Length: 272
Image (cartoon, rainbow, N blue to C red; front, top):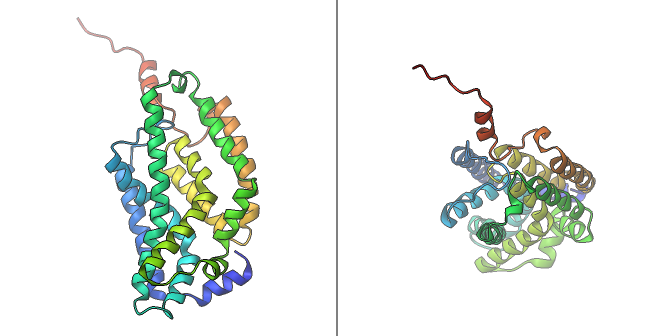
C-alpha cells in the first residue's frame, strides 16, 4: 500500500470495526479448519453437494480475503459514520456485498467443475495426464500475474481512497453495491490465485494459508506490486515442477497416494 493510503487507513481506524473484522476472520478460520481437516485429496478433490460447497466456500472467502480487504472496509466505515445514521449496518452490508462477488466466482468455479466431471475425460486421471494439466493451470496463473488486467485490478485493490472517490453510493443498497464492485476488482486481481488453489487441492488448509498470505502481501504491503511479479515467476516454476515431478513437490497431496502405499506393503501371511 502506498504511504498515503497507509496514512489514510490508520486515520480511519475504528476499534469496533477492527474487533469485528478480526473476530469474523478468526471464526471463519476455525470453522474452515474444523470442517476441512483430513479432506485434502489433492488435485481433483470432489467439491461435494452444491449446498455444502457454497457454505464452505463463503467461509473460506471470509477467512482468506477479509484480512486483505481490511483497509478498504475501515475507510468505508469511517466515511459511512459521517454520512449515515447506522454506519455499522452500512459496513456490514459492504462486507456482505464483497462476499457476494466472491460467492459468484465460487459458483462459476463449481459449475465448471461439475461440467468437467460430467464429461469424465480420461486424460484428467492423475495417473495419466493430470499432473501436466495441474501444472499448466498453475503456470497460466503465473503468467496472468504479469498481464495489464492484473496490474489494473491490483491497483484498484491497493488504493481504497481512489475507489470510494469514484464509486461512492448512498444508502444500504449503495453499501451493498460498493461491496460488490470492490469485490469484483478483487476477483479480477486474485481469480488466478484461486485457480491455483483449485488445481492443487481446494480442501488443503496448507495451500489456503499460502494463497491467503500472497493475496495479503500483494494488496496490503508497500511492496505488493513487486510481490505480484515475484509470485508470477514462482508459479511458473511451480507449474513446471508439478508437471515434471509432482511426487517431489512439498505439500502437494497426490490422488490415490494412500492406495498406492497400501499396494506397496508386503502381503500378510495367512496361517493355515
